[in-house]
Image 1 (cartoon, one colour):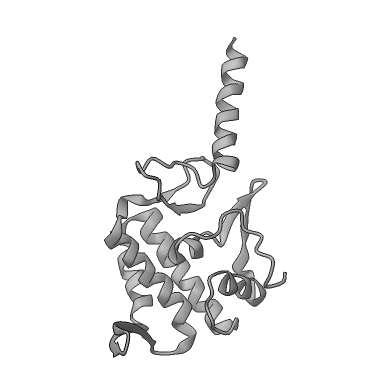
Image 2 (cartoon, helix red, strand yellow):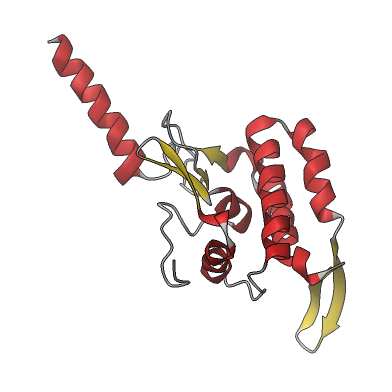
Length: 178
C-alpha cells in the first residue's frame, strides 16, 4: 500500500470522523486501514499530518479511534473518559505573532500528535453542531460523516454507494410485491 493510494470509500471528513472511517465494510467484511504503519502513512498523508508513521503513533491513533467510536457510537458518558485520556497528552498554547492571536498545539510526546488532534477535532465538532455528526443510515455501513447539507438531512455516507443501494433495495421490494 503506497502513501498515494487511499483505499477507503469515504475520505475528506473532519479529522475525528476521518480517523473513525479508517474502518469500513467491503463485501460484508470489515476493512481496516490502520493494521500497520503503511496504512498509518496513508492516513497521515491524506490528512496533511507531518508525523512519523511508526508503531508508537499507530498505537496512540488506535486508542483515539476506539475512544471516538465509544463516544460517537456508544454514548458521550461512556466515551468522555476515553477521549479525555487521549486529550491528556496535549494542550493548546495561546500565541501572539505579527499576524495576531493564535493557538499552537503542544504534546507531552510527539507520538501523541495525530491522536490528540483527532480528539481535539471531535470537541470542535461537538461545539459547532453535535447533531450533524452522523453515522450512515445504511444498515451494513459503519462510516461516519459531518452533515454539511443546507437543511441537515443527509442520511448516507455517499448517495452513489449506500444511498443508491437503499433505493435499489426499496425498488426491488416494491416490484416483488407487484
